[in-house]
Image 1: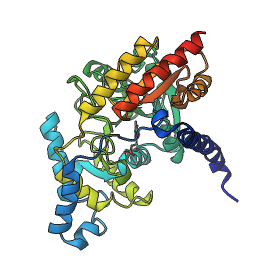
Image 2: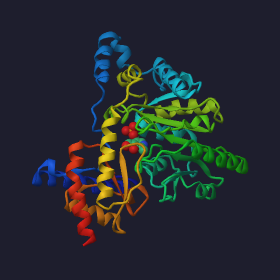
Image 3: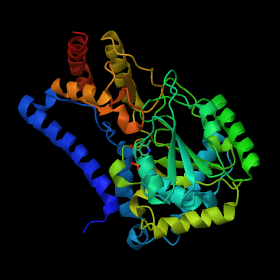
Image 4: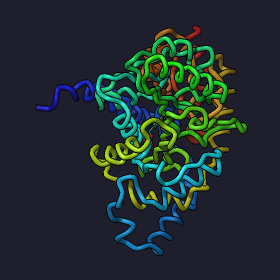
Length: 396
Ligand code: PLP
């Protein structure tokens, strides 16, 4: 008998599978090019050439037992962690060493390791709606309780006043994600400083540690030179979770890292606990070949001009068609106000026009839909008339 605790996931999964199957059915009926699939955050830009070259060079130049063996430390190769630390120091004026870095199996495992390391069962984690749907599952994996701070739908910036009211003695962490999935907003330095001020006061009030877990898979996907502040510079009790899934278009390779700054509370125990969490959660160590690839490609990023072009074309096309949407400064998503109250019903109507999108309900923010524009430019251009027809139908 399958565990009862897994059955809600199984049921939820059938809904996702139904969406995939529907996409495949529509593609078979109308032709793949006439189906506008904006449902997934899978990068549409291939990995930079340097990645393939690095793989070949590593296989050629490095010792097989070293490249493919277990890592000596569950935190990953020491030289790779040094390269990561020095890269961060160069970019952000920090002073990390290999001791501050734990290589992870993408951001997803990084978040699980961070939660297992810092949050005890029964303690609370706050996340700002709308947020990446898996946060709730990751918290539940470790017996923690995820609480949603309701969205400020005017700006989609974190609602700090409500956050302040929601913090109590059991609050152990606040997850933030900037550039944000699903809204594309970027949190400014002032916002991070204001958040840090409140958290410091609350730590004092309750005599506890409250961590910021900064989930940053979209850090490099920031447009028009917008600054994405490095959170450890403003708040000591920060753990940064990074991933190369989007920045090098390597989501299937499962590679990322966590940063634990030395200034954080109980650093020595925390970094050891994270190393052990990597092992006991079954990740053991981040994939070894790709750790070495990431280190060799530390200066590379994806071609963000491709996403930028999509961003402008889709945003302008949708606004012209009468949709309301905040202009995204990063990531590759638009979070659009549903023209009817029920976002799930709107998603179903969109499907009748061969448009596949995700309801805001899935991000704890009903009344909106997420459109992932990591698709071909051609798909964007050809989808605009379909979005217009959809709006015309709704307006009657
Ligand atoms: N966090 C956010 C906000 C994401 O959007 C994603 C993936 O889409 C992840 C974490 C997981 O990333 P990874 O593939 O590195 O595990």
